[in-house]
Length: 146
Image (cartoon, rainbow, N blue to C red):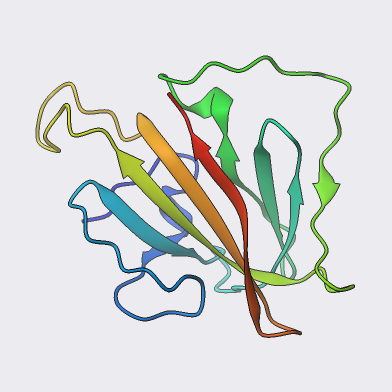
């Protein structure tokens, strides 16, 4: 079963075992790792980020904008949004096209079948980008939401 916030749920495919994004395995029943795939099937994105952090991935094939992470989406998070701050394109060694993966952790306070469980109630997130030009993984978010 896929457990993910509403804004990305339709764009994720579960990662299991070895992968190109991160070395450590996922050993916690409340932690999930997903690769991001656009609804058009494309896995290549131009990614934009600010300091909140807010992260948007733009599909290089169809232009779909996917919110990967935004504190405003999570009920347990607090954020002070600066309307002046712009999203900046993520660039690694002059490359701006990436594959993307997200690791999401939920609190162990509620079981997944508990009526109080909220898929948007994540408590921690990491976002990894895989630089397809330089064959290198980079972490761009490591954030506790609560």
